[in-house]
Amino acid sequence: MSVSAASSRLPGTVAIGRRRVSVELKQFFRDRNSAVFNFAFPMVLLVIFGSVFGGQEVAPGISFAQYFVAGMIASGVLYTSFQNLAIAIPLEREDGTLKRLQGTPMPKASYFIGKAATVFVTYGAQVVILVAVGVAFYDIRLPSTALQWFTFLWASVLGLIACTLCGLAFSVVPKTGRGASAVVTPIVLVLQFTSGVFFVFTQLPQWMQVFSSLFPLKWLAQAMRSVFLPDSAAAGEVSGSWELGLCAGMLALWCVIGLVLALVFFRWTKQGTT
Image (cartoon, rainbow, N blue to C red):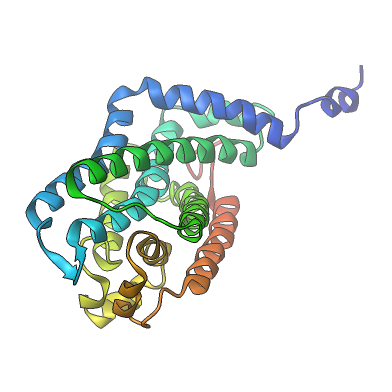
């Protein structure tokens, strides 16, 4: 049997990616500490901030908890995708997992599919838990129109794709697996504080608003506010409107940027090793 005949029967990129999804999900849920932390962390922040500021209003008829849940859902995208991948992949690279995968016929894109699917599943469960706690204890109002749910869907998908690809690309930055958290976590915190997650965006200094507009979290949080806040709240945005077209465009742009960065910079092994 010729090599070309054997290789022609190898599964395609998507097929290999689907098989990788099962492996990634099993690995994720077997690490119970990590799984519980991923699901619980946004909920814990909602409980803390909701308990401290829950009685306050950011605008007439809009509680802080209602405003905060939109930001936490946007942050959930960043946690489950960018932060988790940028920390977990260096660990996999350091323990030899990625080097073993490099020796298989699996292309980078199939590995990316497996990671992305795990991110989507984790995010879905995280949102359900977060919203359930918000509705039960903080009177969070859910979206009431089909358009709002549609906005929630496309914002989530674009945000997850963009942040997943950026996480894959950024995973080459930490020099060691143990040091990855120290490199990644401060970046996530800076983006949260400057993107209107913990504070009303228009109350932030001008330079913070400009800085955050360069990154996807700001646009994702703004789109989520359009989902969970009443239409009248759009007047409180910098432009006086939700700018959903611009939000979608910026998130789509970051999907393209993230894909290019991931394909160019992702490495199976540490730079300089084989």
